[in-house]
Image 1 (spheres, chains in turn brown, yellow):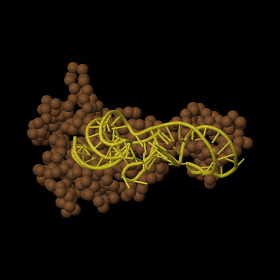
Image 2 (cartoon, rainbow, N blue to C red; image 1 turned 180 degrees about the vertical axis):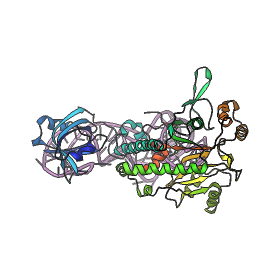
Image 3 (tube, rainbow, N blue to C red; image 1 turned 60 degrees about the horizontal axis):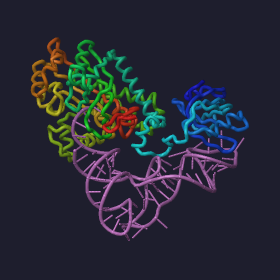
Image 4 (cartoon, chains in turn purple, red; image 1 turned 30 degrees about the vertical axis):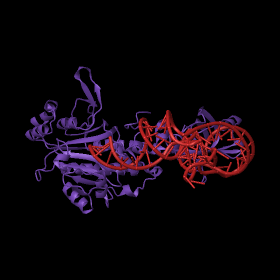
Length: 429
RNA sequence: UGGGGCGUAGGUCAACUGGCAGACCGCUCGGCUGUUAACCGAGAAGGUGCAGGUUCGAAUCCUGCCGCCCCAGCCA
């Protein structure tokens, strides 16, 4: 038994392949079966006079997505897609597929496809996106492993803590409400004090009613936290990571990127250093370009796109106004109106793929910030402890996996970057 | 939540100014020894999101509801 991507090394040898039918064509006494096994697709040629009668009869029953086993000889043939095909000596049905398979190799609407997501995944483009996602995930682990980071898994069920945006809640025994985590960062900071350099890799949840191409209610985030890194170190780590992820996909998933019709030239130029633009300079640039943005406003999607004009690689926008950012970000000693943080904006309209910052490490300053924001002090006691016992400069960031996959794949919407996306109006399949 | 758009056959879309609701894909049968989302011939089946209203007559106009898409806000 051979998998399709290995066929090339079995030229002129007899093999057996299992997979699913994608197309069938017949010209009377010669017939073609195109099948997929997850590693690739292969065309098989069935000549009536050269196969058992049972195989020819089995061909007549084949429909899209029938599971089959093909027996034949691998032949190089210029007429075959991919240059290789299978001259069949036998064919058998493993699992029949009724003729009403819904996802045809034709144009369908988004809603129809999402209703059939469990079947849509079998389509070449969807499978290619899943392969790229998997490669990115593996590359994340390899990147951090090579740098002696420790992976830490932070809780998914939490008490109210972290950012203020929408939370999913559930009853939790006698403890009142529990919330699905929307970040592991605060726990990551505790772990960084224990282990030095850590990262988290897990699902996060936002109950916001966001209906855009960049939002899911359940998404995966990679959150490194590094002891003794300042904001500049933090950005260097980010550009190394993003560049590595792009490089790995170009190196090992180029075929999938081609399937997705990604313009790889837009990826090949991604390398450190990424341009760095301060928030204050960004506002000035935007105003010069005609934006109505005022110093102190957060940058909207339109502003981000305007700012990214002319850049071929991701860009850092750093040191945003304190009021626009979270309480835990460290005040900028050179400009107290701002905090030491950065967003990493991807080109081509993909927007923010990373948000990061240096964390406030001064106990009194952090306490004051928690009070200023009106946050419940008792919930943050343990977090403040990190500043009481051996406080340390540290920084980290959150990389949005789906946004990164969308950017690298060139997909129009993050819903195609995860097998079963969760959106406001999409809980099944 | 706000702004814009759209709901017609299993799918993708047509239908003029309100006047007999159609095409293609798919499906069934037949043909073809090199097809590439095959081609050729024949055939069957099937629809105006829901509820009202206007009208001799509504897919088309009006009101309400439901659903979806895009953009914005929030953020990864």
